Length: 140
Image 1 (cartoon, rainbow, N blue to C red):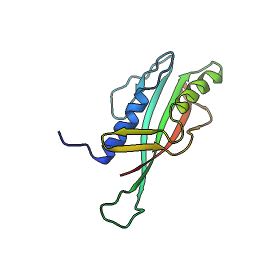
Image 2 (tube, helix red, strand yellow):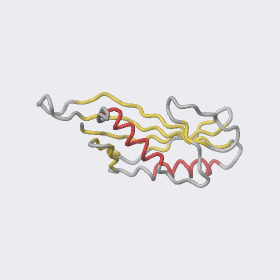
Image 3 (cartoon, helix red, strand yellow):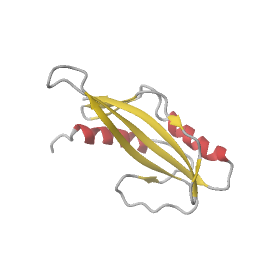
Image 4 (tube, helix red, strand yellow):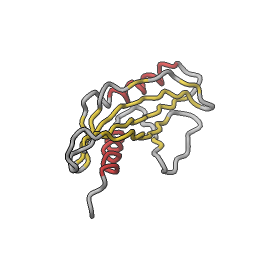
């Protein structure tokens, strides 16, 4: 089997790290383009990778590019409970991606650029949403 493209390797490094999050209770995860039934009660995570523009920092044609992006992990928790419940889960997700953490898939390494941002809780129709944004970069 051929090695995956850089873009695929970046995604697989990020996905592998998300899969390693230990939460109690365990929360189901909504992955991009995979079937998922949103639970009516209880919480879940939704994962999105948002690649940004690649930057050419070196002159050589074969030199690596800086590939910036965001890993978005949205924490959805049941409504009508203390907001601290959702914030605690979001904080645990953020702590799972400390600054300078390196995640690899094959020959590609992705690094967390800075501490993740836990945003303000947002009321959804059925859940309370707390976005967690992880800035990442890769030189490949």
